[in-house]
Image (tube, rainbow, N blue to C red; front, side, top):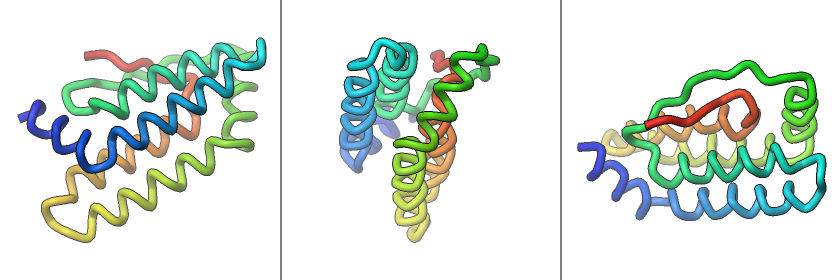
Length: 121
């Protein structure tokens, strides 16, 4: 079932959001201090590409990572999170789209504060 969900997710917007997070990771890696954030955004992009069958485990971020989380949330994270929330609302209009909408709502939190989450199978 997770394979079918991942294929539908990929076709119905997952590839576009993964590409957006990947590009945000590249932009973050341009600066030396943003490299930890960029690497985490690459992980988020992988999770956004194929979310079904993966778990998110919380990890306590260190002081620098917490500062990077706050800077990311202020500069670009809120835009990504708002996009995920709006996409989730659009998917929740239909009964069939509710599982995808709920997944988008969960991802809104991960893209707002990416440092502090680990994505495992």
